[in-house]
Image 1 (tube, helix red, strand yellow):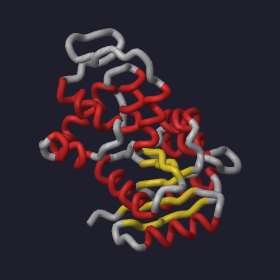
Image 2 (cartoon, one colour; image 1 turned 120 degrees about the vertical axis):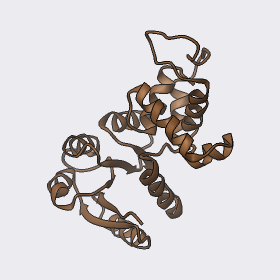
Image 3 (tube, helix red, strand yellow; image 1 turned 180 degrees about the vertical axis):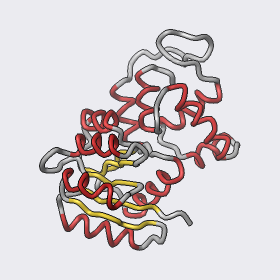
Image 4 (cartoon, one colour; image 1 turned 90 degrees about the vertical axis):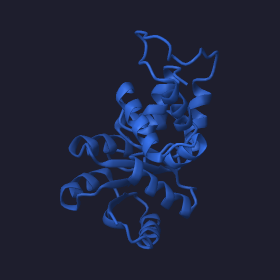
Length: 218
């Protein structure tokens, strides 16, 4: 079993303590560092070597978005997941632009949080349905057919299957859920998603969804 090294960054000690107790119940999760500020997180990054950071946006000092950007600059392979109370679109977009691979709200159920961490470990990111709905609402309007038939200067060419899978990603489905819906293996889904990421020039599901909706690829 692969162990995931987790750093918790939140200025509320009681909330961090609750997360530590929750994560201790999973043998594959190991909390290697806690920080109350972005500065503390950056100072502990090299010594703790986390695989995953659960990061609040509302931090004293440099703030969550800037902390995310700096963490990703120093450790590009690090997976940063925003865990916060804020669900406004500007915060979401800023976090995605800073390199966050997921965005979760603090009212998430404990089991759902653990499942989200597992999905991030398997697939590199997560797109929650609430975020998909907010993105779709923001960019809703007259929509053209997906750009799959011919190349354009505005966006990449996706195959019909890639477009179908990208639609499922935008809906917030995991690889397994997509595989079950389309009656294909999750490994095939993973290969398609890697191709989609390459064509869109993105690194994770959240960035792919934002790009797809903005470019009206789905």
